[in-house]
Image (cartoon, rainbow, N blue to C red):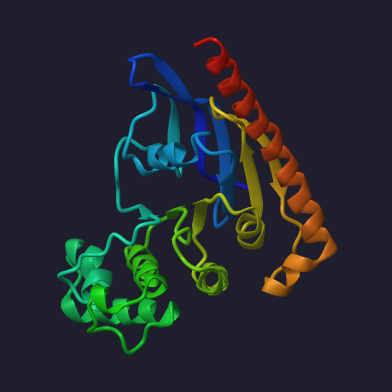
Length: 268
């Protein structure tokens, strides 16, 4: 499969509060195919969100490169849509105004961008809420607006950083099913970061497990659950087997983190 998105030998270093260098991501490479849905999981602090911000062009790696369709990413761009855990909607704009924001910046005529906004609001199940304001919506509804806004910009890649993390379990399940449906209807390349292993396996074609800091790829797992996906599949023997594999990989890395912290405490 032709790589849509390539991460080549990405290394990212931060400074600790004491001014010491901390390697967040170390020599990490990924090749993501066109229209693939990929999830990244791993222990807390392993660099998942850092990696997403590098792909978004919000931060520059110390070394390595990110290529989209073979061209280097040097900063933010409309070819990548970003959905965060926080809803990041413009409170002064209506639902439709939020979704139209990107197309308006591109100079699309009012009638065209209005039609586009209504199309994506329909896909996320928000027909009839075009004239509502964010403060009038639930958390799940606001996140659906954020997804519609990202898609209306027609990005080549959709980057999602724990987008359902703040939602209750029932709403989260509904949003997961909705996202799978949207991905099948409007196939985009999606890079999804989550702490939730069930979510990663349910949504993705491949799950990458990162090591504890410094973040590297520990495991690449092709998800064997067939499409179309339904929540009932999460209780199938195959799903449970793959969940156990990911859990064990993350547990190993989490224990390393605990051991390192314990040794550090013993030396202070």
